[in-house]
Length: 87
Figure 1: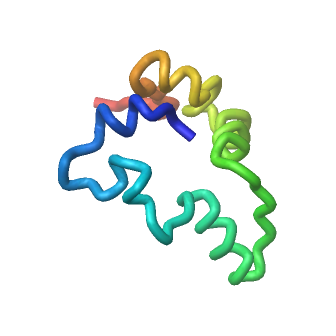
Figure 2: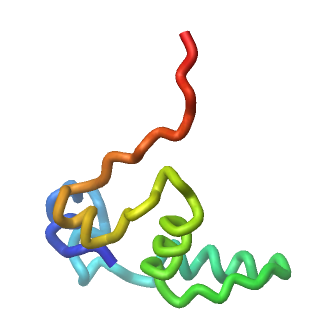
């Protein structure tokens, strides 16, 4: 679901997925996880990675406000740390 520019930018000549014609017999990771969860008797009714990211963003303070658009605009994300650092 990320822009093609990201695939082209971060892909290497050794990655089989850099070009669309090389995407054979594969499914997105989010769909794979939904299927595995179903086989384990867990109900995960997500229909896209954006839906999963939205839930993570809404329920995990570290990912608060993170979107695909933000990742595209900023070339990634800088996560906020919620852990207290002790010395």
